[in-house]
Length: 460
Figure (cartoon, rainbow, N blue to C red):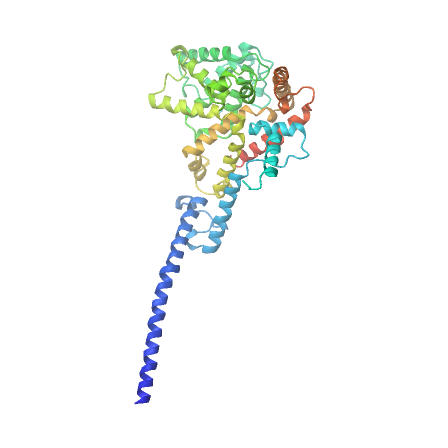
């Protein structure tokens, strides 16, 4: 009897252990395994978005380290890659300011102050004081139908970065602006395809020219220079593959009008003296807002309405894009534009790093076209084109670059003279008695131009 009872007890205990292990296994599955599976499924979806791996893009391409099939990848390696990619994006998003200014020359500090719209030295001193006193951390190629020589420019120079609008007469500049806009597309294409439209454009450009003031740099010569640069950049990057004729036309109109009425002083000066423009636009890009307003005041005249051919929906789109690209010529937005370009590259690095691989259409990579035709990316590219043309002077040949640098500095010095006369702080780049001209240009190229163009080149 005792032996039978012992056997029964052992059998009962074994049964209890088996039942408990099954129950525990079920609990572990519900609490750990299934959530982990769901998490890894989410990781796969994130990876699909981050790496832009679609079946169409991957079809027919060779598999590499970055091109492995996501569904068959090792989950931990995949998770590591996603985290690394997001870390890069987060770093780009947060790393906006250069904090170490000790030992910097005044010219370099001036460039940084212009980029950030404030005195970086004074701001850092204020931050340091706050820390000490507070214990709690708080499309096509240009096809001329007239002789460019009649405008004072040869065909060879016009189609190069040697173009210089400074020595041209007012009539030559006006004619070149009309030519650049009207002949960007093939004859009969675009939005200037009839004699009436040509005359309307001529009246528009004439009105625009009259609105530009005789300041050293931001004058009509600069407008013509930027219009030429915009057209040239659009051709170089084959913009016709992802921009519509209307979007290209809008960029050219915005280029010729982007500095309308510029008084020869910057936004910081207007805010400092309480100018009516700063008051009207609440210190937010007062000059750029004024340029847009003047442009549409001209366009309101039917004889000069270069958008009269558009439908209501097209006009709304053109106006939105025109305003956006002009507002983004404010140097305050320069740093953000560079970051956005870098993020676009990082998020789509697999596509841009393998330009000649993958399906093509009309000589263009399909995956790239899908990126550039997205509304947000397309607007970024349009803003980038106009801003690039606006600050492209250091990228020209030496004679052209030097000439523009001198008139730019002269305008800065004229503002500095006003600041001295008014008894307000003289901005770093504006003191003609202290500024080292070569160093100011080196700083401009080092801190602004080189990073900006480097970020773009990887996308084209």
